[in-house]
Each structure stands twice: as structure tokens, then as C-alpha cells.
Length: 403
Image (cartoon, rainbow, N blue to C red):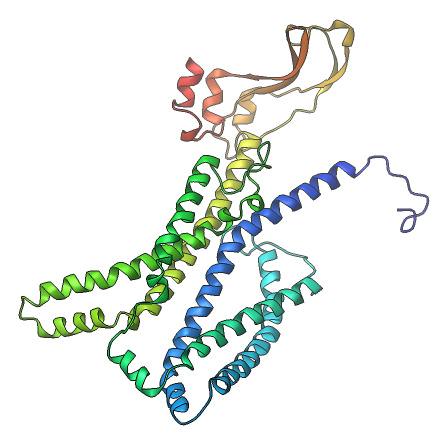
């Protein structure tokens, strides 16, 4: 302050506001990490599957090159150069699109609503450059590893695999899909006990997702496990359907189902790709809508109704009462002065109004004084105005007030 505005004094310290801002940034960072981790995992799986489809389409070419003398190193080298070129072009184009996307997100008011005015200044930080290089490296690995596996095939082994699936996928042979059910089930057990993915407030330390990374991976892990289990059960379903069609006169359907039952690898990748795409879309939309509802309900809960008005107030003397039985602590306080309730009900758009008073107090128990807050309400009008959800209590608000 002395450097920018000399001879300036600060009457009110901004320390509380800055500390509150820091706490909000930390909670938002954890929330975004919980939101982005499943998306990043599913996007990486999406890249792997797309590259796998591309390599499968070129396996005939790779097998022909291997049969004519090409070495596995040459095949992998071509895949590496191709992936590096695509990765660098994507990194350059993605940087510009990232600026545009960030500006658009800065104008977001709620899910798919970008009508707000934004004055956010976007800069390219070293962390952003590092993240972009890491993404290129992951995409490069996804490009090279399938090519390395395909480079081991010759034209003879490739034609054999095209005619019939010789072996099951490695994840079925090792039982990976069944083993992944254990962490997925445990994650849902922990989530059910905790009650939320991210707990903010008094139990924030126990609900920190960084203390239990399994909760961050739980949505992506669940989508992935369900897709793998579907692929394990689908050939069995095709075999059952083939057995039924064998006893009918439907030759065309029998040949189609028999081909799917004999070579499940033909539809393995498309099914996983479709499952991950739909799962990612459903997860993103449901989480965004949940965040919208949480902000909406938390603000309603804080205000208490659609609108809250505070009276101007006049200074009066507060004495002892049964809520604060300390007459020696008399002091000048601000007390609200309201118009008659009928005056507020004549405002445009107002359907109902109620008086609510909030007062400081204390409770004496066991020789100790416990600060308390006393709310005064009008039982007849409060239920028509207050924000209330059915899951707040087992009974309706009117029944609770009558009781």
C-alpha cells in the first residue's frame, strides 16, 4: 500500500477476507480435482481405444511389412514419429483452444449457461506447459504401445486371428476385470459411510479426497469395470443366442450371431469406446447438475427464503433477559424497525411474508456460559415463506410448527 498509494492508511484490515478467499480457493481446488480426475482417466482410456482402432485398421499393412523384412523397430519408429508429429500439432492447436475454452468457462453461470460477463485474464504458466508436454507424452505412449504389439504379427498369424480369436484378451486371462470389482466395491462402501465425495466444513479433514485417492478414481473405475464385465458376459450371451437360433430357420441371423460369438475381438473395442463415451457424458452432466443444485440450495439455506430484508434500526439499550442474564453488560445495539407486514405483501411479486428475528444469547449450564443464537418466528406465516426441502425432516414444516 505504501508503494502504490503513499500516505494511505487502512481502517479495516483485509486479513479476514484474504483468509476466507484462501480457504475458498483450497476447497475449490479439491473440488475441481475430484471433478477432473475421472474425466482425465476416461479421456486417456478413450485415446488408447481410438489409437487401438487405428492400429487394428493398419495391422494388415504392418503384417505385410513384417513379412517383407521390416523389423519391429522400424514399425515402432514410424509409429513414434507419427505420434510425435500429431502430438506437437495438437499441443500448439490445443493451447489456443485452451485460452478460448478458459474464457468461455469464465462466463459460465450454471450448467451450459455462458451468459455472464467475464474479465478474467488468462496467461500461460509453466505448469500449463508442463501439463501439455505430459499429455503429449501419454498420447505418444498410447500410439507406440499398440504398434509395438502389432509389430510382432506376421501375415500368417494375422490371418489366423482374423478368422478366429485364438486366445482371450489378457485382462480376461488374468481376471483383471473381476479383481477390479474389489477396489470398486470398497470405494462405494467408503463413499456410503462418508456420505459425500467431498466434505466441506467440520469434517473436511476426514473427507479430503487426497487422503483417499480411491474416491477420486471411483467413477472412472466403475465405468471401466462395468465395460469389462459386459465384454466378458457378451460372448456367453452370443453363444446362448446362437444356440437358440440354431433351432430356427433364420439362417442370416444365425450366421451373424455365430460370427460375433466366434470373434468377439471384432466388437470389443467399439463397445468399450461406446461405454466410456456414454459414461463420461452421464458423469459430467450429473456432476455439473449436482453442483448447480448444491449452490442453489446452499444460498437458499443461508438466506432462508427468496428474499431477506433487514430494517434500518434505531439505537436502544439492551438489558438483561432470560437469554442473556447479565444486566451489567448493557450496551447500545441496533434494533430493526419494520413496516407493518401488510406493506411488504403489497410489493410486486411478493406472495407471502413473515417476520424473523435473530438475537444473540447465552445458555448457562454446569456453571459455564455457552454462546447461543435465538431465532424468533411467527408460527402462522413462517411455513409459507421459509425454504424447505422434503429431506430436511420426516414431517412437513407445518406439522413441525404446529407441534
